[in-house]
Length: 319
Image 1: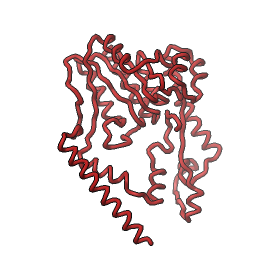
Image 2: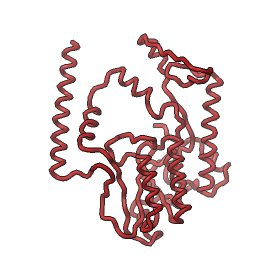
Image 3: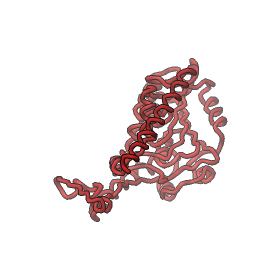
Image 4: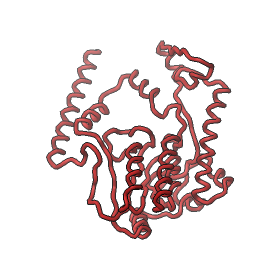
């Protein structure tokens, strides 16, 4: 029975590999848009503003190593640095579609955008597509003007820390996590541990501190008093219309309107997009195979417990 199962699995993998090879061979015939390094998707005008896409989970490493649109923290930080030195650049338009991410990376990119404004005096606008929540809204607080698609969900101002407690599953499978540590709190948050009241209080103090930073930034960015912001910042998500009514967004409009306003503000019509990917065709092929290969129960467990978001303070909307 097991032999038959493995044979079927190997057959599926082989078929998938052949299919992917065929797809990439065909893609090579018409020309690939991804090369090793930065990909410029259109002609570069002499005078322009930059469109920066904030898409997917805001975290250290891209959620997908082969997706040019996936949030890539180091590339975006470097790109803004290059814009600071680029005298042909006249501003930044953020195109946002993200439910947030880690506290650290949201804050670091926000500070980089604020550095850009301080050093250049150039404007930053933000346009919200389907979702611009939590850490994505945090980053957008660097913008002088925020508009949103009428179907956008935004807000979710708050902080969360979560981790998966696997203790019951370990016991069922006959597994034991052995921890050797110094101090009673060193191993708190382990996959097989149970939080004490004191440990919960430690985590709560962490999220409270990050929450205070978040609400303070919103208050300064949107010219609100802190108490008004805290009433809005209970973690809930707002529609675009509600966000305009409560002061979190300036206007409900479409992408073309947001683009036209940025052109008017900067005095230039040309813009540049930066999509960065270091993925080769072989990288894409191997990643595609990995995505369709069946996973064992142990592999799934390891993936859950080793997530780069587990036990980390997040400015992130709950799905």
